[in-house]
Length: 159
Image (cartoon, rainbow, N blue to C red; front, side):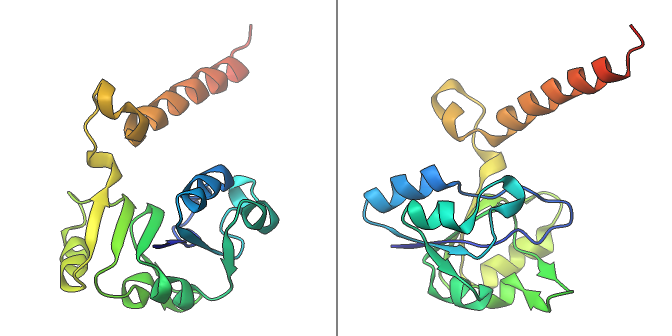
């Protein structure tokens, strides 16, 4: 199975959907992981980190989307107008897509996924229960936001 990890194109998105340790786990299971060049740079991971973990680096996003059986993203598919690329146009029909999909506010995008016959896993819809805690993206993000709020408040406090 080929798993693709493209660069995030959403403004101000610095996260990456899969870190090098995740690549190592997936390749150990017999998968091939394709990572778009510089996909992890803003999150602190170099292309070398990915290749050392077993990933194949891909220069062209079209190639990555065209070859992958599964695409893993932080955010849903989007459009990078500056680069002239629409991820929904690049993804091949029948691909599985995983990430935060924002299904309640962007119904048009979900309809486009349906037209492409994509299998979509919306990470934010994973139940917030103990058994699914390792897959619960909302709780982990809320925890980080809470810690950051305390740090920001403390840095602004005069005492």
